[in-house]
Length: 145
Image (tube, rainbow, N blue to C red; front, side):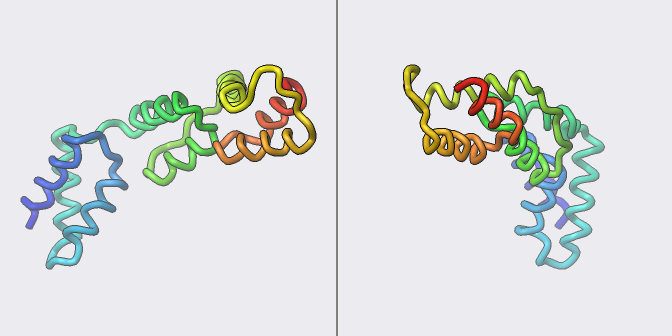
């Protein structure tokens, strides 16, 4: 039983780094129903920690955040995503957030586009759906447009 959980952890970590919460969730779906399943999961995760297979949660959070920054996601989206994975939140950089929000808008609309009230509302909804905080949305709409 425990060997099955250890092999499953090795398979998962070989594909990409996972947080401890992700591993528990994935193993719980496969192994927890069997006798001694929860103990086997605990043993397998302890074995992974002992062998340094699990990356430091802070480093993993920063790497995932960098990936999401490149995808032009806002800080609220990023921190929600990290929270779902059981990882610590990252600090917001207002200059980076503003730059990403402006890139989203310039990719979506033409440069010489005149923004009416309805268009500003559309921009606000777009940025909010991308996970940008209200301060960044306000700056883009009222100062940059």
